[in-house]
Length: 443
Image (cartoon, rainbow, N blue to C red; front, top):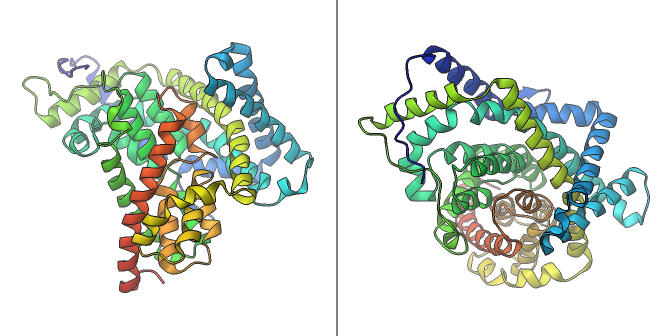
């Protein structure tokens, strides 16, 4: 492991380093965690920027995202990476399929069933366009959050909390919260960057990627609206936050994550003669002073964001559509739902078979349980809303994003983690949901 035994920063350049640490980190915190209300929408800065591009500059947005998709589909064949493994081959083909589906949607070609509002229009307008713009914009904002010392400073301070509970280093606290309240795609961008820098082990990166990188708080609003939970928004948001983090605290200690490689990473040891506050200040200042010029960091982050967006967006369309078609026209999720029936029954939820099928469909697309259970009773609706977020992994978004990173998680491992998270989330959510109904917090 890399140890934190470097001496405190020298006084030369100290005021400038402190200014960089405070100024740039403040900008990053504001961009990621300060909700801004514009019109009737309250969300973080770059989400507003992406929404403005999608709604006010739609032709430009479509052109940019389509260009990214074409680049992402062509890249594996140009670089020859498509033949490195079966998984790479399959997803390389899926990226090409994603481009074809985007053209079919935009040109109004193909079967009418594909053009129903919850098929290609939903996948392209609500997911592909949004992710294609948010990832590069978020990557630029990410430069301020993790490039100039805040990650290192918070990492030292949070070590006593993060390590014993979630088995991750202290600096993962920023990653975890940014992943939860921001976008899973941006969260995975942070995780991948920190992992490649050697500040996460493979196991630590997997814990963050599968435990915190869920849909954004803004998308949670859509789920809550669909399930008629907006009157209880604060209860829903904070209880989901607690449940998701509690589930991650369990999955981090059990297979398959517990068996992953944990070599490398950052040591917990404090430098000799420095207390935790002093060591945190030293680490933040040292990174702020050694960081490249802002324009270089912005350039590198934008390049990484464009690369991830180009890999993820075409896959979202292809995998998402396959999942939606399977959910609608095949018994795949009925069979998968049978595995959940005993847990739904133990949780005391109404209509266990139908509820189980709906929750299982979340593996294809996290929004499907909300659509299928929007008319269910209050507790089932609350459980669906929580599980949609807390299960984290789904084929139309987060799973392709993880596969686009260097984090060594296989498809089989992610499906297993999804199942464990879904079971734990529905049991916790059901218990809280029954209490909430009795107390009149949900109706």
